[in-house]
Length: 139
Image 1 (cartoon, rainbow, N blue to C red):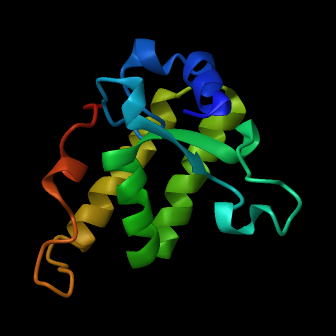
Image 2: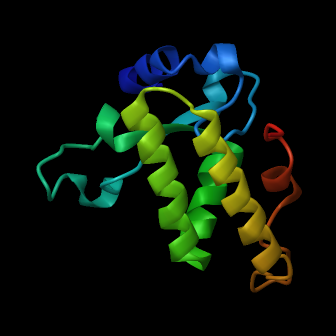
């Protein structure tokens, strides 16, 4: 785990809260990962940001759910992706996982799930996995 990820977990009290920047629960810090918010990792070197693991550029997400789900949302519905990203940027600026931001994130996820509930991949599997819908806090 990168040092910045450990620092952000401590600063945002993620262990105490038991959920990540999108409200997904986790059991162990090893499940958490750094998500590049403002500058995608693939562009960081070109922009002189090294690997882009900088606090202002990050959110802590559970890799197997919120992180993977957010990348799926990015591919399927860019508008919702940017709205979710905006909420996480606000959390980062505030220095806390704010209940109002988490409520808006939940509303955006519910809207995405309603809008894309029948979408399937090229093998006929539902795009929205059960674990993307479960394992998040109720608000």
